[in-house]
Image (cartoon, rainbow, N blue to C red; front, side, top):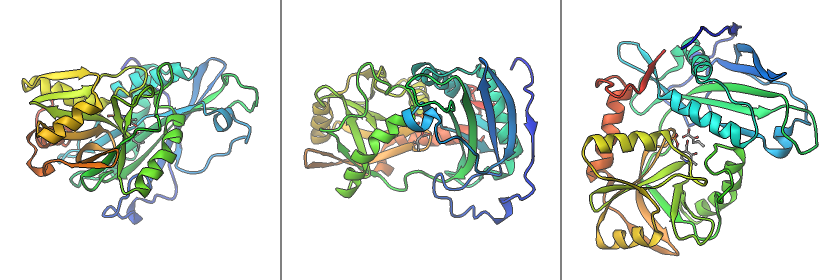
Length: 354
Ligand code: PLP
Ligand code: COI
């Protein structure tokens, strides 16, 4: 950190913590008592405020609503048994936040300001961090354009905000996934690598169709020929193939996941060969048929390590091994949890202490 951030704090007079049911936390529906709101105008970030969570008033003409100049991040905070509070690798999210900002012609935020502002909010609502297994405080930073102007051009004013809320697991069972061979999530030269709101908007109709067909998630494929695997819903796709960790290399079309990077670093430390490269659909299907695909999972902040139970490709279904018997993903999940919940030494320096 360089210097201490000056944040104006207004505490809620109506805390909701006591009446919140921590045994029933569907993802993304419960919000902590406070939120962070910061304005960008005249070329600078100003007016840092932590205030009670609640509605805000905006012009209906803001360009975020019309042209989608908006993006977000997803991070988690954990509470250790001794009460210590940590945020998992927030500096990686700061990097990606700024990559998204640049692609969407929006202002960047210095990494230390991003991390400190989030830590200040988490600190105020530390009572909201669940301690149950597989639970965490989900942190949702986001930025959107606020010029009330209907011309298509980059806004000159923005808001950077952060919400937090306690969450349980995003997925509760192994996923039945469909390899998408019609719709496309992202194109070369597009903004698939950014966490742009519009990327999620365009995924909703195909995802809804997939759910109607009985699937839990889509495995996205490349926009040219649907020949190569890209991502798995809102997570990166990872496989153990012939004993190697194989995952699509990131580029224009694939989000550079923090969880993906974490899994790769663990695999490398364990001496498991890692291949970041193009992954052909045909290769995965062949491996599922001949038994060399011994593990498959989505890796993401909300998803954590989400095992794939079966893969459907053009109507043909391939059931994989029982996720509980899979050596790699089970070991990754346990190692990650031990670090995040403070049961093992954080030798990688991944936990940012609040
Ligand atoms: N890919 C997409 C499209 C996502 O929305 C996410 C979720 O954040 C990820 C990958 C995984 O990224 P991370 O591990 O940083 O959460
Ligand atoms: C996350 O994992 O943080 C995500 O952004 C997924 C989200 C779209 C639910």
